[in-house]
Amino acid sequence: MKQKKSLQELTFKDNFMFGAVMLDPENCKGILERSLGVEIERVEVSKEKSIVYNPEYKGVRLDVYAKDENNTHYDVEMQVLRKPAVKKRARYYHGQLDMEILLSGLPYEDLPDTYVIFICDYDPFGKGKYRYTQQKICEEEPELSMEDGAHTVFLSTKGTNVNEVPPELVRFLKFVEAPLSDSDKDFEDDFIRRLQSSVRKVKESREMGARYMTFQELLKDERMEERSQMIIELLEELGAVPENLQMKIMQEKNSDTLRKWCRLAAKAESVEQFENEITEE
Image 1 (cartoon, rainbow, N blue to C red):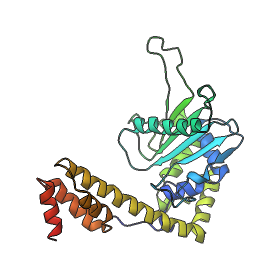
Image 2: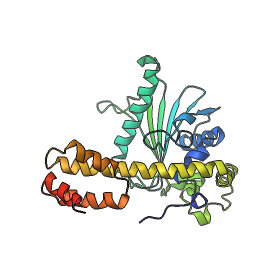
Image 3: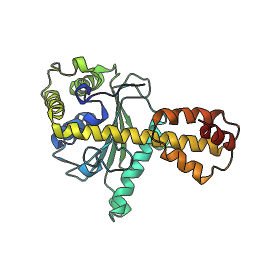
């Protein structure tokens, strides 16, 4: 079983630490500026959407939401592990941003620019780039921009094109990539020193220590809920799943038991067989 990291073992790229450090508007502003190569006057981080500030949120949110002085909205996500359909994930996040903005009563024509930024500790497209910027063009007229204000940027710590991107972006991504043993070394960059100081403050904070424990429990609960749903979905391929059986599966809180039931569901030839096997345990 994978060992849980303690708060002291976290680096900037661990989701909890990333979220905690990015709650500081100056940290968030600096990362956005380096990610996009633009200057931003100020940013406002949406604290109510962060797991650090909202431990009762159902479903662990690991993204960072912010907006700047021009009402441009940003969604930044740290991606340590490769996940499937990353481009469609970006499309989903843009949809979520637009929906929240429209629900506030804003008409379509006044939709602000939005940026979805993935900071990846791997190369999402295998082309050796530190930064991949998605653009929309017209196939019939390639020089015709079809930009609609929705921008997507993928950053990669595995880039090799050092001469094609600003050195401060490379230094930042090297910091993101660094293991615990190298995470506090001098990257000869004042902004990275600021991030390192923020990481140390999170680790020294008793309040953040308590929040990290809550975060771990929420992750555990969410993973168990996902496994329970998977068992039910496997059984539904065999036939109707009685409500009392669904309830029994959803109420099970032992992770070892759920793993065992998942294997049984995958091998079962009928819902009745599965139910008999877990009843006889």
